[in-house]
Length: 479
Image (cartoon, rainbow, N blue to C red; front, side, top):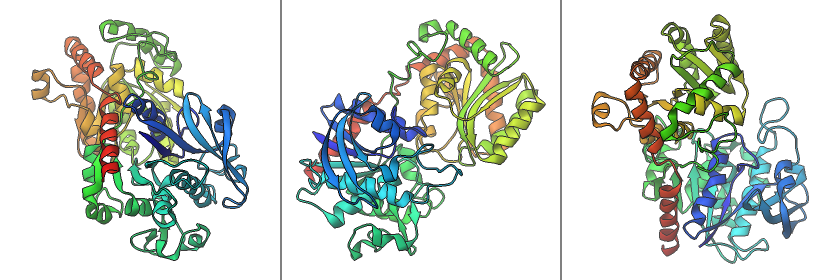
């Protein structure tokens, strides 16, 4: 089986978050099931620099404001087709944000171009033979199913739309519709029209043959007003084509036994070696050395991630004897609150504002817990990394966090199945209680070591999830 995928970011070529980890790892996992994936990605500078042995498969005299080419080749082990459109993608800085920290003003054109190219490739209109299936990820590629439905081609593809976070929808003024190259009937309730505007994700959800999201719990949640972000009615109407398939992680990249980012590698049978990594975390974050519980955070510092609530817990957390190492960036007020707490508690709280791939690995390998207090979390990869590294997750009971972490309640501890700590709802009291439960368990070395070993034995690979995608593809082709 051969499919095209479309994504705005892909690890290790371009990454702002977990989306890139998924789109970078899934092709390799699918290859083990006999599925070949070619991913259509924007020609960012880093992508173009990594592209090897490429061939031009198609050219555009005008692709949303300038000449463009589709270049097929290999890049860092991935089969890709880069949309080489310098007027859209040859920019320094963030994928989505300009130097002023705001969205690039032409993001609608940039990602319409990506979607159009992917749709035309899949339908045999852009120099390729086409593919039976086009798998699109998030709003940045959600126009592709719309192009397939309304602009078609000699070999119309089946389309799969995966929602990684429904909070990000790609909504733009109706005035852009005339630039998209779509017929008038595409701007309708069964297409792009969304309360008088153009909704990229809404259009993808309305027109795709199948919809997936990244955990079974999140698939249920987004059909409700609380979590559906205004699209719950559409998703309820299309519930028969909606599936939740939990993400996995790339176990070659996230492997405590071979991780080049940490000073001491280890495994489930050599957990004592983690102590060297804990010392390294203390040194890097200027924490007072000690054997007490050390919490870790690797997160966007946003309301969605529950970081405002977490900031309110810091004084009590330190008073209880815990320490914290944090890496993240996000909302200014939350950043300010965390830095202020670090100043109040030198040697107890260390924070690095920004994102550092190596530090994220070190935190997982050296901290005792990883905290993910999200108000909603479609899947979450951070807690999966924590399970893999024996860094026990403390998570809100929502979405994929609920599906992947077994709470250390009394019954689970007695049954010997607990792998972390859940809490609900997301508020200061319940989070503080979860941190307290974690500290109590940590005070029992035998109990803690057993939980670490069970966490590390959890299946966080792509194996089962890749098999689920393959079955979905096969069913779609039969249909």
